[in-house]
Image 1 (tube, rainbow, N blue to C red):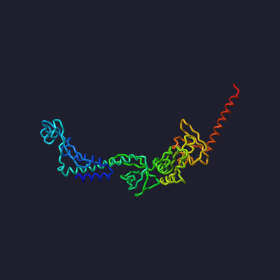
Image 2 (cartoon, rainbow, N blue to C red):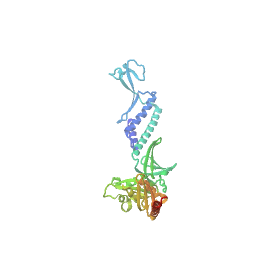
Image 3 (cartoon, rainbow, N blue to C red):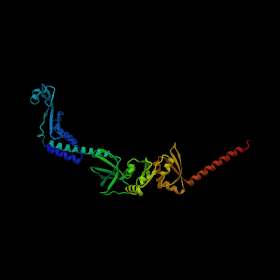
Image 4 (spheres, rainbow, N blue to C red):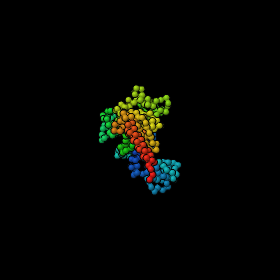
Length: 370
């Protein structure tokens, strides 16, 4: 029996990725519950499994007394000395319990408890493995679409990729290999729920870390990101090494690195912005692909006024205001933008107003007093 048990435990340990010690503890707890049930739930019933031989030992612990008042928990000194020489009143003894008469029902109960405990241990192993991967990009295979979710097969379990977390211009099919950002791992009644996303801005950050060694190594830092998934992303980068061009590292030779990321995002446009600690410069760069003439800022209110050439205005604002909205999110500054002609008109009106006020004041000075 012990050899078969050891073989079964070793096999389950290999298949489920659960340590042998953990399985033995689970098995001990399961068998102990069955044995105690047979003995009316007595707490002085115990059970151990030898980790090397897998021999099972069940026993009841009794206190040695002169006169027995509770036979379930006590043993008379005369009876104790027959089996345990040298024991005295007040000592405890462990009396073996035969296991061969536990019966079919007890064995079936033990089997059910063992399976339940193994499933719990397996879920905990999966949870412990994937909770440490939160924030990483992982790959899996689409196995089905059900109730508003794609289910992605991973090495030992399934992950959930909600439809709302998939790029709107992409339909996944069964068997497709998909990369996604591991956003959350939580324990639910059925086990760990591993949640994935392809719309999270961190997905793009993760792709850059995979494609750009300088970012992975920490020589180039991602200072910020703003994204409208499926359409456009702006990412600000900065080099800690003066010899490395941050933008060039992200773009790659002939654009190979950024093109690889764009393909993964199914054509989503990416603006790589060189970060600057000068807000005027950073704001101007953030409005790429537009070129702007001047940037004025109000540091207290953290607002900026941008003046762009008339031909660049629509490009700076972007379709449905997308470009300026992403620039605002990336920089953290509230940005207003005017065309050069609008700005000139406002300045002219202000000049005319100032001139009118000056003439009025001068006329009031020259008016004779009554």
